[in-house]
Amino acid sequence: MKRYKHLAQSVQFRRKKGMWKPSMHDGRLLYEGEGRSAVVYRIQGTNKALKVFYPDKVYIAKEEAEIYRLLSGLPNYPELHESGEMYIVIDWIDGKTLFQCLEEGIAISEELVQEADLALQAARKRGLNPSDVHLRNIMITREGRIALIDVARFRQTKDCVNWEDIKHAYTQFYTKPFFPKRMPKWLLNMIGIMYKKRLLPVHRKKTEIIQHL
Ligand SMILES: Nc1ncnc2c1ncn2[C@@H]1O[C@H](COP(=O)(O)OP(=O)(O)O)[C@@H](O)[C@H]1O
Ligand SMILES: [Mg+2]
Image (cartoon, rainbow, N blue to C red; front, side, top):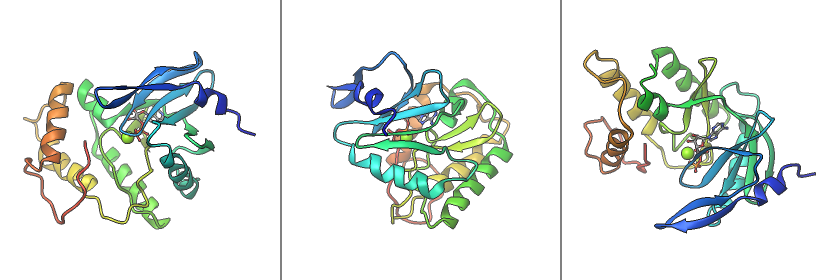
């Protein structure tokens, strides 16, 4: 029985400047965020999040659901509760993405970076190859733990160095006293664009697929 299918079906999208934007949804859905493939809501009265994929990205739902099944039981990943043709239902994470932390000046400790590193290693031990690990896909929970979301690209065969670059930037820049711990969104987005264009002095080992921050 698909308990949340009707909620997923209530989400309507329209195209705006070449991007999909949610235009309508059931009142029990509370907006959490959106990315390049989907919009995410908390389902009111529950600790579950509904991720509804854009009309041209629905094929990702099945892949992401399968990957969450493979990650099941690992503490730093949400559990999957349900999946359908164009949606998945996972644990809702009460927290903020690293991007939001930088925007709001919330300190990111070394322990958290290590925790994320271990969580990625745990995924590798399950035969996965974490990709698309960037600042909007890593969350810090209210309890101060790491939660990794958006695992759809964890079976990608090409190696992704985003996480290595984030760690490098963390030790080389973020931890230095002169480095601002709070940055406006426009600056963070600009750093993301420069990263994509390879204009940042971050060390790279291999050619890789460049993802946004
Ligand atoms: N389980 C969750 N709990 C809380 N917020 C979430 C959850 N999943 C995603 N989000 C929020 O929604 C945004 C988009 O989700 P994400 O899965 O990264 O979509 P996309 O695949 O389009 O990048 C995230 O950056 C985050 O802010
Ligand atoms: Mg994402």
